[in-house]
Every structure is written in C-alpha cells, then in structure tokens.
Image 1: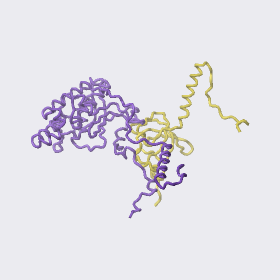
Image 2: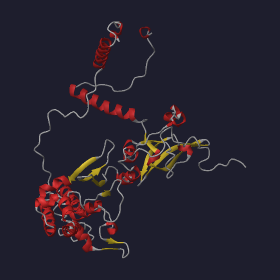
Image 3: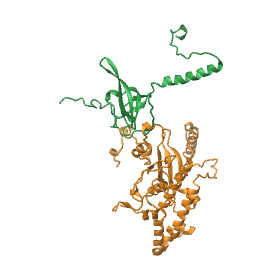
Image 4: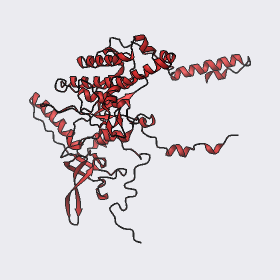
Length: 141
Length: 302
C-alpha cells in the first residue's frame, strides 16, 4: 500500500515534543498577548491537537492580522510556482511564539530617538544612520 | 542478600522527566489552572480574576488573584484568622466561618474598588441561591471559583465560602447543586438546610446532642466554646453580629507587630569551604592524638 499524503504526513519527528519536555505546556504561553502587526514565529506544539497549522508553516515567521478568542491570524509568505503568495492562516496560541526578528530594529528606533533628543538638547545635528563596515586598514590586522 | 536488579540505573535518571515543581509538591492542578487563567486573546491585557479558596488545618484562605508571567498577583485576601476581630473566636474552619471569610473578602474587594455602595449583595443570609444583578453604572466584579485540589462534593466548605462571596456582591458563575442542603433526589436546594449551615446550625445540633448523650465528650470537644460561654442557641445570633460587623468595616488592619530584626534560624547554617577544611583538620588531629600516640604528622595538611 502506498504511503499517503494526509494532512499530517511525514510529521513524525517534526511535531514531536522535545526530549523531556512532554506533557503539560507552560502557562506563560497562554498569558502572552499579541497585537495586530506583531511578528510571530509559527512553531507547532504536538501535544495540542487543535488549531494546528499545516506542516509547511512550521518554522515560518509572519505578521498578525487577526486576533480571536483562542487563536491568532498570521500572514505568512508561501512560494507557489513562480510567485510568492501572502497566505492567511489561523493558528492557536500554543503554536505561536513572539518573533525576535524585529527586535533589533525596535531597539535601534528607541536608541535613535534618545540620541536625537539628546542632540537636540545640545543643539547639534547628528546622523543616526548605520554605516557599512569599510575596507580593513593595516592597523586592524 | 541485596537484590541488585531492583536499582534504578543511570540511564533511568537520564531519561526521567520531572513533573512541574508544584505538581511534584501536589499543590497545583495544571489542567484546571490552564482553563482558569486562559483569557480570550481579543481581550488582550484584561485580567481574569480567580476567587481562590484554600483550607488548612486551622485557617481558611480566600484570595482574589490574577495571573501574570512574572507570577500571580493577589488583589485582596481574607483569612479566617482575622475573624476574631469581628467577634468570631471559635470554629474558624467550619462552614459558617467559610461563609464569613468569603463575605469578608467580597466586601473588602468591593470597598477597594469603591463599588461597595452599588453592590450590597444579599444582606440577610437566607440560604437561597442569590446572583448579583448588574447596577446602572458599572458591571459587577467577576471572579471564577478556584477550588484547588479538593473533591467538590455537596456541602463542601468551599461552597460555603462561595456563598459568602456571592452574598457579599461578587459575580461568580455557579450553580446551587453543591451547596449544603441540595438534595439529589428532588434536585432542589433546600433553603432551610442551607441557611442552617450558614449560621452554624449543624454545629449547634451536634452540641445539643453531645450535651445530652455524652457530656464528657462535649466538654473535651467543645472546650473552647464552653470557655467563651457559647451556647448552641446563641450561635445564630453571634454569626448575625459577625456578618454585620464585616459589612461595617471590611478594610485590612495592619498588624502592630514589628518584623523581627534578625530572622530565627530554622536549620543549621551551611559552613563555608574554609570552615569545612578547618573542621577536617581538627578532626584528624583529634583522631591522631586519640589513636596510637606516634601517628604521622603529614596527615595534618589534608
């Protein structure tokens, strides 16, 4: 008999819980709040059977476009043939983590605002632009 | 002969997954906790309050708690140990005391939120099922009953505390199936029986039975009641007074006791590395001196 291509086919290891982390999930997962526009990582928790995304989305990062009672709507990019489609899926909160991909930018924004405020107080004009790493000088060898 | 086969091998320990700490301690039911804490995501940061009732051997603890990632936050708490302040000195863990504690917590919370005038609750405890009606300006304070790990049988004291909170003016979703006096056959709450329990009628009945049949047991069992001069007939009056006193002033009273400047040590202090080394040297010296008089001197530097 052939193998079959059901919804959860080939997910024996992908959806398995990590070693010694089986059983109840930590409660902090349920206490996190998500707002529309946040970046989230989709990571399936195999012990929660409801609201699981398809295995394709495991490991993808997307933005929140909808918040319902127990689930989050996430907008993820998927390449279909020769184009990339923005796909909207709904996922229960147990399968979602806040993403740190955006963290660096948010910190930089905060820092830059502070620097600009300080510079304004001093009366200077500063540039907060990031500079690319230039060619290495002999001194740095 | 030692049975070596029964031991747990190193492999066993390497693979062993411990349960959560509070589960190991047997204090938290995580399955129930998830369901109590889980807030609708489209309500974002709105707190979901639990009305926690726990019984110890000599105390009743009633708290309003909301959960957060850093740890649960207790908004207000009431203990049965505070009831002497309102005139109830004995029987601090019975159904009637649970009612008083629940009532105290409810009035305290409402006073804290300045809702106590709007939501008087049920001033005269009749024992029948009472649910708060929403007033004009604000909706009633809603909390979910958290019983913990107790078996929810009909007539359990947690439901006494629940009734106290309901009559105090809190909105706790419930049914009257588990109140004392609910009859399984008729599927109805017997209001008279419930009212009896709220005012300690069951205790009074036992007191009169013992007084007639076994006076010695009565003396030993209800010695505190006798010392305070409480008669079975006077119990209801006393509880009515306690309820009135609670409604009059439910605010927390700070205790005048100063915290001790130095904490009492309950276990031996752990020695530092130097202290342990020094102790070892002393013991070896003592051994050498006690043993053969001409022992080696090299062992001192161990």
